[in-house]
Image 1 (spheres, rainbow, N blue to C red):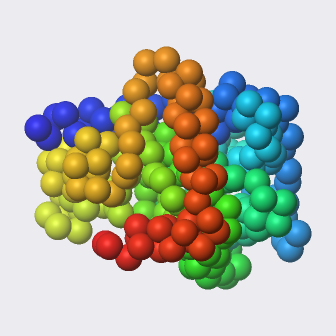
Image 2 (spheres, rainbow, N blue to C red; image 1 turned 30 degrees about the horizontal axis):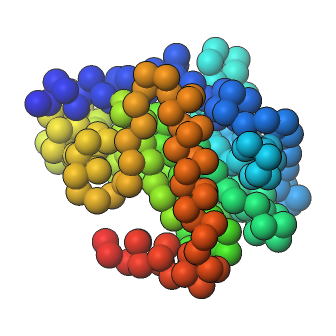
Length: 252
């Protein structure tokens, strides 16, 4: 069992996985990227913009890892700074203003823990996203398409429906971190991965996520699922939408 969970961890972290930009251009039409948090600077780890899905305007926000060393350096290996989370929130508030559903893609080991990020309010930026997303008046769908690490992932995952790709992972802590804390031995990470129940099947069984997306014909399956889910969510009143989202997370 530990081997199964550890294999999922390695697949989730693979550099060959599709990125937020891949999904934005392959599933949606006319994607236009926006930059900056209007306060400090742009953050390459967060990619966001507007697009359309079968004629429906949507906002896309996602955490993007790189596909090469230089790309990863430019995107800080998919670890957002506080300005990245503030950029994400700016785009989500803009989506609310114009009535656009929000689709988020999550693939990060976690928020960047550097001293500069902490000085600029990393914890506050994440907490602010949790607060604001819980009350946004438009549908939100979150998709964990790789590694979903800790609060850095949750900052884009307060959604009406949370999905995972079948070989993705979602956890409060990395298996290596868990093994180091519990046993003082990071080599026991495969064992920790099993205990943490971080795979899509485990999380669906425990009610943490709502759907698993197959990684065969992923683009077609995900596009069809998004169209269906947005049609369903759009039938709810604003009050029903926000209350259901609130209750979804209160149950934990």
